[in-house]
Image 1 (cartoon, rainbow, N blue to C red):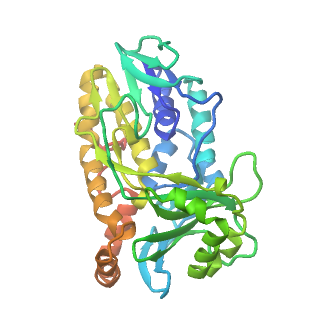
Image 2: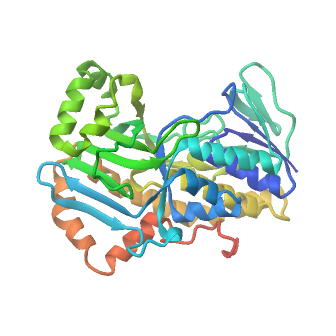
Length: 393
């Protein structure tokens, strides 16, 4: 089968590798002039790592990333814990999160896709799809394909999804992990000022071509707040952040230019039918949410795995039905949880943070709730529909 994939992100490269390994002729089109990623650190949860293992690249990803054993959040001024989720107190690698820089993950998946026989074609700005062909901005089109896969992310020109804009986003940046810090590398740490400020730091392993371990920093901002942050200046931001979290000083001292931080804005929405006539939508092109639960890259990996499985021995349109049905419950549950949790950590509300800190956090420490939260974060609270031992509809 001939397959045309729009977008060489996490989902696009993963599904290309999986389909090429099955003997399909796969071409991946992207707008970059040469393969390169954008973004900062992210977490591949255990359910997503299982997909990397099937691609034969989990060991390479782990060699580049950093294990995450715990998510720990505190109220910035009082130091009181308001989030505490352990992946696995015993530290079994298969149960831990994998923090990895997007450049490292891209490198691993890019190599896997090429090794499987997929073709990567740069300098193609996708504008639409018609008759099994991808249409490009330069009035060219791809060769006709039996299936088009839309992995072009949020705002994809191929997707009918129009997500609801969320009120808060975040600035993200990558720095060296300081030698003079006592902060643990296996904890995704956060500080909150009500829900209007969320500060985070996470070890994210190594970046290809660079020396030493890295860290990802993030700081929440209102969706329209980036210009004001730039105007206020780096010095004012560093001063405010260090006053809230002094241990971040050696991380923040490395940020000397606003260009080192990138603004990310988020939306929330889900396609009820993530496919059309000869086209499948995966990842953020099919469903997008805030990164609060750390599931974005995992969802793209799971979509790709479920789609590849559904196509085994089935006609294209029947396979697309099976793909959508396989992923429906898992996607719906995580979209609902993301919508519920996000305003408690990123919003202007004064009531929700009190509910979070005084009611929900104490309740989250009462068994069996900690075990449920662990499975939620790992991505295993419901069957994903992508596992090889999970029957397809």
